[in-house]
Length: 304
Image (cartoon, rainbow, N blue to C red):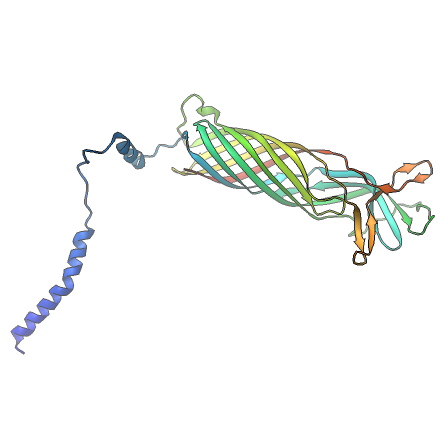
């Protein structure tokens, strides 16, 4: 083959391989639409302008979804009863005045709301909390299990595992109204928006306790406030502090403990004082306790 023929073939091959790349470069060039279609509506133009320039502010008609993490302060009396059994073994029965108190609980939750006005949002709120409770017992007594045995004169010492210290779970589902007072006059622009909130929810407590017969329900009233920071068009950071008030009353269990693989059932008894010493009878009910607590939460909120 001559040098001319070889050169022609090389040039042809280079042209064939470079042609797709040249076409791709031409297709990838950016084009700018300088003229708008005659049929473009005013709303389309407004939407395009809004997408180009975002003015921070609250808007009517948006859906708000918020996931938050927080804590619920349950350091208060959940259940108290005088002269009730707290320990049983083959030798003796022990009783005293018990008090069960909660602790600070990890409290995540979810909110889904709708902005009826730029300053008013109705929110469905659901939460769950996880913690432990602790038990104290004073004015303790002991009596041997033999029939007719007298009560010991000395107060028995508490063993390391004599009193309950177990898990506590709470949950709630409710409806809240959130008001942005600085936006009520019509001006709702800006990144920082303080708010007030309040509502009502159904709430339940479930203690892993020998004293209770399952979970107990109540109605919780809450109110509080916080601040919302608009990070961008769709994302906000929200800080809440709320006060909760409700009453809780647990139902007593039928048995305090099951021993020997369930063959020995220890009843949940109380030992009130009478003229002859101490009576012994099953616990029929527990008193109601008023719970006043604070919750704190920090969440991420999306607007759609």
